[in-house]
Image (tube, rainbow, N blue to C red):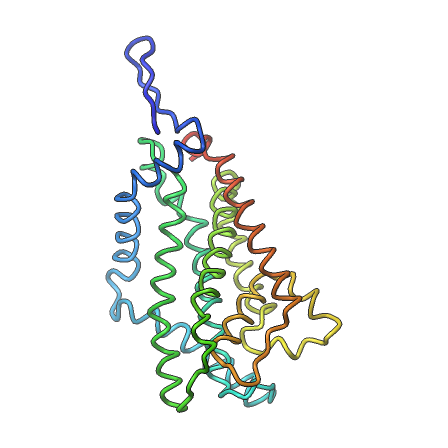
Length: 280
């Protein structure tokens, strides 16, 4: 909870809650600010664009087409018994969510500099609202997956009921990485150039356009050091069913890394939070 100290010349010093318990209570108290920031960003994102929120559908759809042609038609890579566009898009959903969250979170504190430097509120609200905005795009993009399933008469198995679990894991991965980048971008503005590179490079080293089953068995565990690999494999296991199998050792490794990323991201963000108003 914020506290106000009276010092000489009636100067007011605004401080963050001194304890963790106070801090998390403050997040609940300022929940309306969270709603406002998230709703504002949703409205602003596609403002003054000709087709508006349809961009949330067009970008992943075009990427899916390119990957389906290159990897499915030309390279003839296996599709785990499902139509190749569905294989690709079941990975595009978590990847786009993760990539958008990194981009939005990294700039979230800088974009709200005026608000952060003037009033106290739990700064964790800012990057969290950015992740929620990316999650809205994720939900909208899910319409394409439903359309592809209808087009190919593809009926998912009972595994689809486990999809919320993997969505929660994707949210944790996005939140953890986003908190690290949001904190680092305040102190080191170089990250505004590094983040697009991370996103582009991550697309190629993650099993988005292909199945991770093509990775040689002896490298599968090492490949899972990329935490998004376990998230994508989980999505495919839940959506595709049938021949799709989950490489359990790699998934557990990715899950542990996601948990570590989230906990360390919260820790580092809280550690740097008191300096944000001064540095920004």
